[in-house]
Length: 126
Image 1 (cartoon, rainbow, N blue to C red):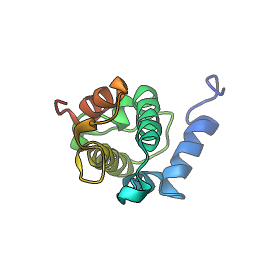
Image 2: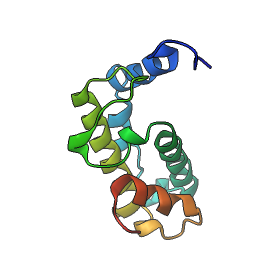
Image 3: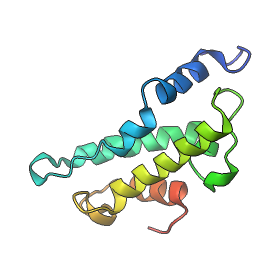
Image 4: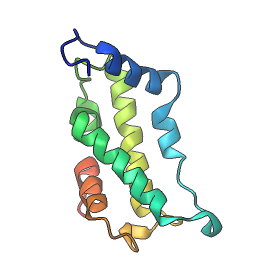
């Protein structure tokens, strides 16, 4: 852990690299398999665990209005990059939760965390 490092530290730099260089937020939007033949419910559980970890680690990048996004000091993203990341995460979790091809409104998923993450990230009721 680099908690004693001067921000951003290696984990903050790695997070920024995942966003800038590897388009983590874009890949999250396109990760959902929509073909009935490729639908596996554990994929939804694994995806929601990622959202949960991100929300618990960097809530300012995962919830609240997009236009008021300030990056945390330990992640070297610009305000614009942070706002775009947040918007893409909101789009992604909404897609996982609501779109056809997904388990609509979390049906067939027994993980309570999914509904909680959807509500916390989007601000919408389950």
